[in-house]
Length: 108
Length: 108
DNA sequence: ATAGGTACTATGTATTTTGATAGTAATGAG
DNA sequence: CTCATTACTATCAAAATACATAGTACCTAT
Image 1 (tube, protein in one colour):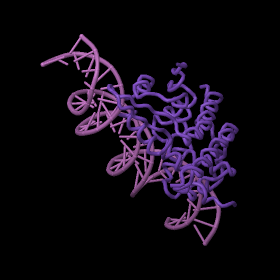
Image 2 (cartoon, protein in one colour):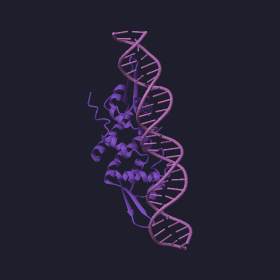
Image 3 (tube, each protein chain N blue to C red):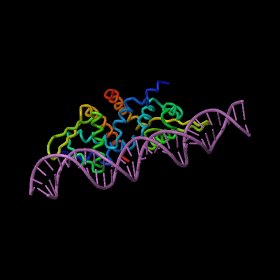
Image 4 (cartoon, each protein chain N blue to C red):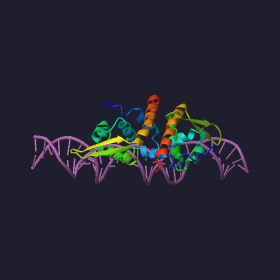
């Protein structure tokens, strides 16, 4: 039997990915932002199924984890833009692959 | 602006993938089973951080979603083997990619 | 007759995650 | 002075998820 302990270790890559991207809206947000920078209001209008509070929370967590960048323009009314970082961009192919797998195989 | 409504649709591939693989142990279980068929007891011993009840639940859900196969041998004491289906195998590269991305980029 | 191994199953509880609702700050327009 | 706009922030309730614990069924070996 091969060494199985490498699986399920609490600090393995897969577990970390789950922790960072586990939120209900995070993959969707990353996917959306892959189209380019977006203002908070645009994001909100694109995700009417959830609340501002939830979006703010998830966006801030993604920012903390360095997957997205948050830029504040000092104007009134305020303007805040979110965009993918290089790290976020690197994850994008995986999101695409997940979506494709889902589209191809979960028709029911 | 491009058409954004394709994102976040409740039946898009990405959302379905999240629903099916969202459980805390599912990705880890799939990854573990990619090494080959495993008996319930082996799985349990490999995941001591959680309970039998939780593992049973997640394995059954994966079975329902056709990602794994459950084979019961009519012997005493009972022997039940779990293994990846073709569909599960097709998802495996994505799991690998996630783990690699995590290992490479989440060193902290 | 009893104990042991394997794979569950049932039930209640705790924890985490998400949602609903209302309120804040800054400033310029009228 | 009041209103509108934008991007939050705070609080509490609801729902989903996970955990702890105990019990079951089956046959076999002693």
